[in-house]
Image 1 (cartoon, helix red, strand yellow):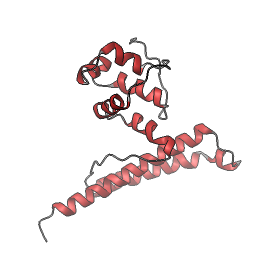
Image 2 (cartoon, rainbow, N blue to C red; image 1 turned 90 degrees about the vertical axis):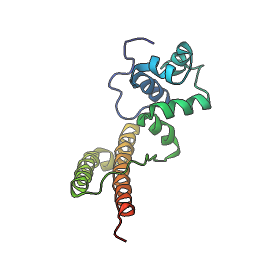
Image 3 (cartoon, rainbow, N blue to C red; image 1 turned 120 degrees about the vertical axis):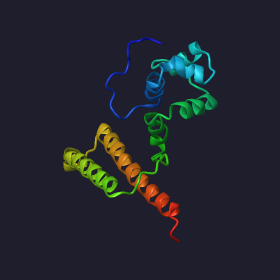
Length: 162
């Protein structure tokens, strides 16, 4: 695979092909390390993750292995977005005052972003890129809140006071 990044500054919302390319390229050690970790031929993997390759896609089993190895959130987003779903990786966050403040700040930041989309709401004509960004930021908020909830549950279940 070329050392030249064919997808610079693509933004947070990627197609499945773009997400596969980015997941392979951004894997620790690059696509060579990924092919080694998957015990897959480097040339074959490069062709399957290539941006402009229409004929070669990973098989379902290979896709599952790529997802498991990379755990790339952009790839997960690209997979579930067409179904209108949100994925969530259970990562409990301590439900401390600081963590709750951080979620509050995240909600304020994301709320400000949503407020900045007034152009789409004003004329009631939403553009695809506006909706994609709105969904991306909404999913970020959902994951943050679910992480706090999981942390609170883990804290409660770990107590020994009754």
